[in-house]
Length: 251
Ligand code: NAP
Image 1 (cartoon, rainbow, N blue to C red):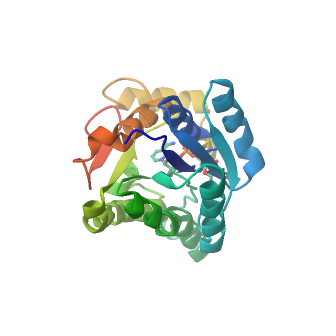
Image 2: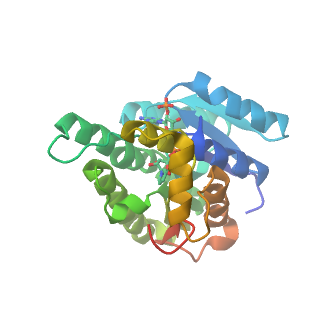
């Protein structure tokens, strides 16, 4: 593969997705920075452009198949057929099981699981036609179970099953699928968790770092580095894997 590749990164207006989008652009890919509102994605696009890369802000709700189909068509028209997809868009609606509503369950399932399904459905044709594709899905250490996250941990475990099945179905077309399961990454999502449990974010970070073998919390760049490896052409024999990027062996 010598031609410039096009990547779609979902939920890329901030946090891990923004870090991944910037890293893939620095690696030489053209990047569709997809988020709910294209205007929110524009600052990430601007930072990529200022650094000499090429990117496009795209608005779409990953849980809505029609919205995803339209977004992929826009990417094909304005950047080229996407052969790298990073399913990163995510939300949390934490609650203990006895308080969790069906709406909280459905919202989380719809963004993480249905969202990843919609995006790979809409892009797989471009990857199989190119005989090259790289799918990276964001799971979480919460896939192993986490108090207050019945919806989120089920979705993140589901992501692992989806990833392994994609690896099996699409492998013969040169398409790999892998999952990254981050531990604590310093983003708005973990800030929201600190707020929900009533702890100042700095204290939450310090407490979390004390539990992590490398004695620090993760940054979006830590995940972006792992994504960069999985989507590289040289990683074509690595598929169906779940890489825990958590500063240690345990969640
Ligand atoms: P974040 O800062 O909350 O960013 C998530 C992004 O996804 C936001 O820009 C959000 O847009 C977007 N998004 C939400 N729903 C969407 C939808 N339906 N369609 C399109 N975009 C949507 O989260 P993060 O911490 O970077 O997390 C990124 C991913 O890593 C998530 O899948 C998360 O579950 C996973 N993860 C995070 C951690 C961590 O410690 N941070 C750990 C393990 C796994 P809005 O701003 O408009 O809501």
